[in-house]
Length: 267
Image (cartoon, rainbow, N blue to C red; front, side, top):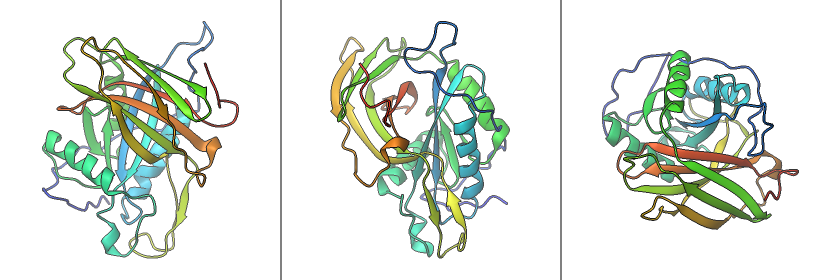
């Protein structure tokens, strides 16, 4: 049974759906000539360990993240834990007011209230995160939209080089964001609606920060410090760069790069 916690405005009824996928590794920038390059698509999940409806959505996204079987698509998961459930008995250790604010911005654009679990695909489509058929359909549709070119490399272990070009025609003012995500995270919940449960998460956003905006010609170049916390497991980390319209919040470009050993420095 779906349960939602309202924030600011009422929740509108949403359709259900989405799909579990088969395992397929995402190709790197130098994929073999006979390996089709997949179109990267972002799935943001606004979730909380205090919400009893959220574990099903988190599990669906985690499986989808591993599965990678939407044809021609590289699915990139961003688990964003909101903090408005924290007052109800359990403080989510991964929660942040930053993600609550990001969800609020989406809610204003979509005309919905903030609720959990909420999935947002490329900033274009939103629905209940545990609904699988709709998730698969939204990912497929998002992959068909025009997109910018985003290139990532690591000139040093602590630096990420970001290059953006070829913004789609008609793109409004954008900003470039850097998210650092970590997989393999879990919590043994001691109180609240999920008391006694071991919750395993899809890729959790550890940090999210703006890098700047493209120039008038639609290009962007920067060397960003990765600012890795020593408590994070490097082998489970990924850098994800988003190019997002400021007004509509549509994501018009994305690229992800693993930060683990073996992918430490890439020209």
